[in-house]
Image (cartoon, rainbow, N blue to C red; front, side, top):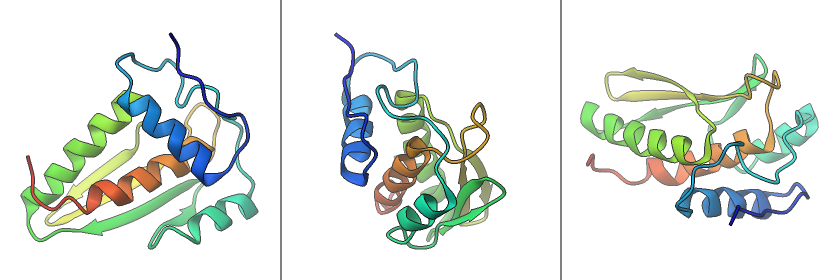
Length: 134
C-alpha cells in the first residue's frame, strides 16, 4: 500500500506527511508522495521560515548553520538527517566543519524551494536537538 498525503499545502499536513513517509517500511519514489512539489513563492517561503529560527532563503534554497558542543555531536546530527532524507528521498547539501554543520535544501529538479524542503527543515530542527551522536 502506498503512502497517501494531502495535496493542500500547510505546515501541519506537509510535516505529518513527511513523518508518515519516514516511518513507513517502503521507500518513497517521490520526495513526499501526494505533496504539491511546485516551487513555493518568496512570500510562502518567508512565511514558513518565520517559524524556523535561523533558516534563511538565498540562491533559490533554504539554509541554516548549526553549532554543536563537539565535532562528533555534529556528525551524529548529520547521520540522523541523512537517514531521514534517504527515507523520504529529499536530500540536503551538507557541509561539515569543526563543531558546525551547514544544511541547504532545494529541489534540484524543480530549481527552487518546495514544501518538501520546508518539511525537511522542520525535521532538521527536531533532529538537531538530539545532542549525543550514535
